[in-house]
Length: 209
Image (tube, rainbow, N blue to C red; front, side, top):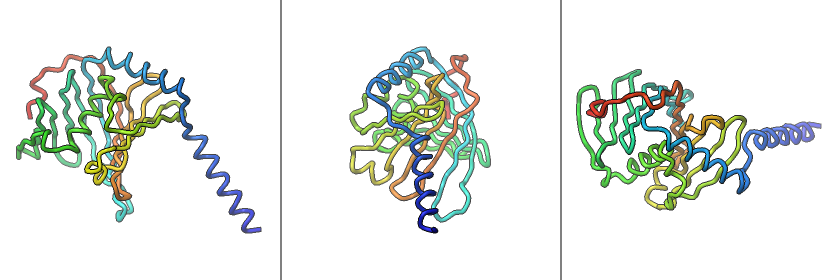
């Protein structure tokens, strides 16, 4: 009897997973890409609040931080962490500018393959240039009211740090609502985007870190 109950629960779990995440057909992939590209071409600036959850396998509770992300075409990007600390990262002119509560530093993106690729994906998700990246194996899935694109790095060095990058899109708006970075271990970072403001005026001085 116990084995029958176990089998039923297992079957129920499998059905639930398939109900939540279904692989797209070729036609659906084409339509999804077109939707994202059409919307992306209209976006000149974007600002959005975010909540970041850092999952570490040895901790019972995820580490939560929050702040604001600001984008301006063609490739200006800032992450402002406001809680529980002040910390900002700006991607600008091939450099990563860091301000850690007043302590400033800069890193050349050319010397940081990981940051460079992540920046390219995030900017690409807004600009519409993310799906032609030959550095990733990409798979596409449908969720309830959302679409999901999974990026697996082909580069062996990058794979040591990031096993997979997942971008979740709102099906109606065709914009990113969640970013998930899965590390080579069981750890991951999940960033939820909300309260988007599109095409508001943003001065370049915002990206001075």
